Image (cartoon, rainbow, N blue to C red):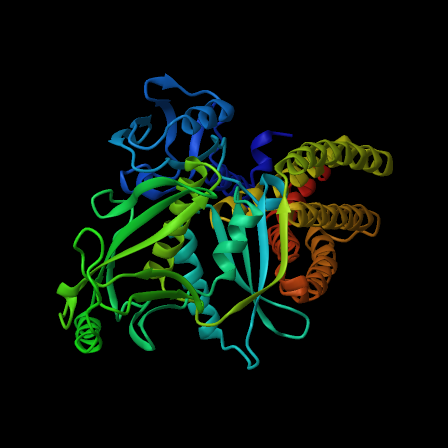
Length: 509
């Protein structure tokens, strides 16, 4: 039989889809080096971006994650930092340690979930008595996205979920972030108030705060560090700008406050300070200069302390507190409090081993199925198209996942296996109907029609059975449903018809 007879319209469609999936996956097995995974602070403001491939730091070539962490760890404050990457060269004098994490350059566009890449997964429940609306969940996700991105965590996924009772939840997956780091960022509702006595001057919202200085050494940074009886302390400062209404409230509240006694150095302040509260806790008290009494000022300098056993520890604590406060002021408060329902830290080592084992077991399963099929039908021209179809289905599922940006995790891989298993069943049904049809003198159209009646009935049943898994377990098994649905849909519409066409041509030869 001539090969060209095999290229029916169904087979051509399959080959075209495989080509599109190859483009979507974009394999690049020769890629090497490190790429920026997360970047924040002044490093981000200087132009270093997620995905930049690292070439050198301060002239030193970087070839491993260990080398990168060692070089970054040696860079202190007020140091020259020259970062060369695929995005160009960035050079500046540091006012804080560079906030950059890296990963090995990806060799394709397939994204791995936390089960395979490692990170933190947290399930959040709104801490309110009433029923939360879909719009409130959307607003919550927007604020969380802004907060985590502002903090320098870019490799993240936030989506809504539900439990079995229908309670609305939020699921966050952050690759490469520590458990404690994530917990501190999302546990905090971020209700900010600045008070003089019992009067509120301004709150943390766009209505009152029009600008927050961040990652700019001219208007934010750690200003001094000193020894103390309990170790060391450092002081951070950053500037904010108030709206006109907030400035008027400041003038109205301060105009009647008495001026205090002159302090050492000749400085004179009002008797009452400006107290800063975050989620009801006093975080800092700022003295108000006598020159600001009754003045509509829009420029406010926020300051606060950081403490530690050493100056380096105090510096890091002050920097952390400043970033936390700046992030809250920039992104605003959450619409309501959150309760952590579940918090998991996942090691990437287990995931990497699982991927290798899954591919090895999958290859063994493919060989085993092929051998059993050959024993059953005694025809190599049935086994080979079946193996090609199974491999095509796996490749198409991966291509669709790469195209839509779905992260493959352990349950997704289980879904791929389930979809391929369903495909094998369908191909056996097609082969059996074709061979039995020959014995009963059915024509090809009747044989294929009988086979696809069974296949479509099984597809409909499986499709309906998978729908409840969309929100099962707060959406943690959604990957299984998605990959299985993609697999069986691709099979019914593309690979099964192509397989039937190939078998028809081969067996009628």
